[in-house]
Image (tube, rainbow, N blue to C red; front, side, top):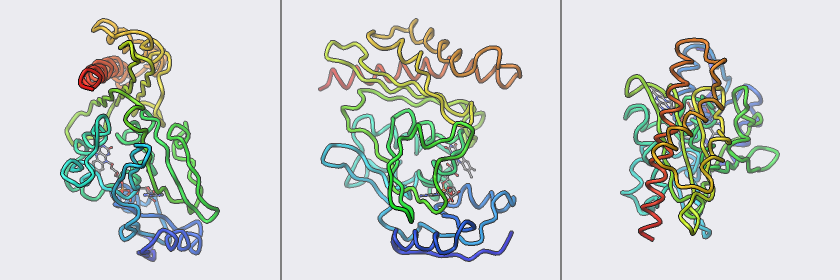
Length: 298
Ligand SMILES: Cc1cc2nc3c(=O)[nH]c(=O)nc-3n(C[C@H](O)[C@H](O)[C@H](O)COP(=O)(O)OP(=O)(O)OC[C@H]3O[C@@H](n4cnc5c(N)ncnc54)[C@H](O)[C@@H]3O)c2cc1C
């Protein structure tokens, strides 16, 4: 491993200064679950590491006055998974974020790994990458040039990586208030429990006053370098009440949209295509059931 200096700033401003001072060779480290592996394999060779471990502002979550959920980028999966035991439990469909955090990897990875680290690593197989695009989250960043807010779908470069600029730090992940969606469901397939997803799928929908689907977002991850919004499949949901037959049919529409048959030329690609259909269908059925339960209970 190439020698590097290690810095542990106490505040965000200090972290930004350190990254600027140490230039392009400097890199942020959060939980280290992706970065340290990359360094061991010499895929990353930073000259300086700026740790977020002591930057308290980047940990935890809060509800804003408008009901949006803001999660600090250095919040660990383990903390999110146990959100219901804290003073700020997650509400309604926001609990799906905690469920996803609690079901990925293994306990050591969940204890160290952070939501922001996963998003900045931008590996399309990482669950949070698919989830933030599906839920139309906003990502706040700060760098020497100031701060900006980026829609999740624009944060990930379609050919891989992110639009983060050198020295820029992801600070906050902001999710819509409760009325943004009525029901959300995340589905994934992995070979073994600690493997990354071979395909992931999310359906987030909102019911109108008449009980029909008023808005829907269908997102598929782990297939291409960035999550794909299956807009034709989502449009098919709007205005109706999906039946079991519809969920199967719309799953197939999503498969055609995200991985057309002519592109599925290997056995893995053909398997992924099958999985897209199944997982999207399941995500639609489960999100609709949740939406229905929430609406009936309110
Ligand atoms: C054995 C194993 C199994 C796993 N299984 C799964 C799984 O099933 N599902 C899944 O989704 N993931 C899985 N993961 C991946 C895991 O989610 C990521 O490794 C982890 O979330 C990365 O977060 P981190 O805090 O450790 O990031 P780090 O490794 O510290 O950083 C990752 C990258 O992001 C940058 N970075 C980190 N934070 C910021 C920030 N706030 N601003 C700017 N840049 C930043 C770093 O510079 C680095 O380039 C697995 C990992 C391992 C090791």
